[in-house]
Image (tube, rainbow, N blue to C red):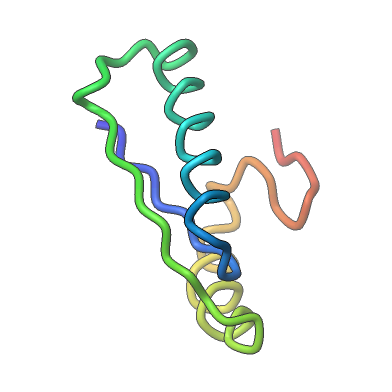
Length: 75
């Protein structure tokens, strides 16, 4: 714990590695978990599929659990 899943438009492996490293650091420092407890994955979603695959299926039904939605803080 935790498992962090990121769905995003396609990016190159160098960018994904940088983002993963920074997220990993935040969880180590702020969440206080051991390095071996962290799992992180990227799922690339084509921009033309974003609305149907992510917004309608995942974001809107979980809107009450989102801390940031469409760039706006929900906390």
